[in-house]
Length: 244
Image 1 (cartoon, helix red, strand yellow):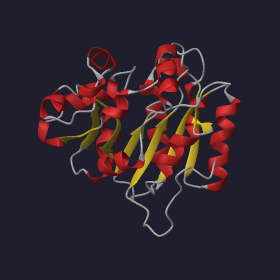
Image 2: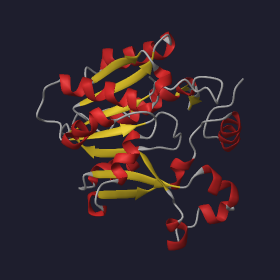
Image 3: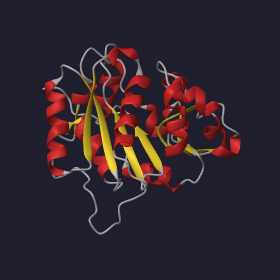
């Protein structure tokens, strides 16, 4: 953990949410663990846990892959300093995101606290994610408040000036609704047994009435890291540290 990592604000009361950080992916398309990519001199997983800590949650559950001791050691260091941080190892990280999410829900349920009313679910590779966006998600009151942003494909087809334009037309093409998101904890528990594969949660959210879903637009979240080309672009932009 570096001095630049956001820390819990001791003067701000603990909130009514928990956080699940989904960090058990094997990064097969990228060819190296995205959790260990470097942003501002620290591993990306450190940056993301720091963002989670900054929201002052009741608990933070970080789901990591098995047989990755470096990743596990980073989370253990956080847990040593912040008892709210819990680590769970996914023994089958190749089975999809839903399995990791179920493991995270089980840890939250084991806490047996009535103080948790909502769950913030984050990934680990949206490299421009920041605290103001998480705060905006947590400020929503719907059953699900999700992030809305472009797909990489749209970014490749639009000029940079268009991407930075906040016009209504631009907002209408922000066509991805996904992580990070905040969801009512009781609803998440109801859905727990139905989660399967990579699209279980998204499929269930789509089945909700429109007035139960809120979105926060942030096209910076488009830039996740799935391929070597994504990584090269992010380094060229200075969003991730260059490899030396």
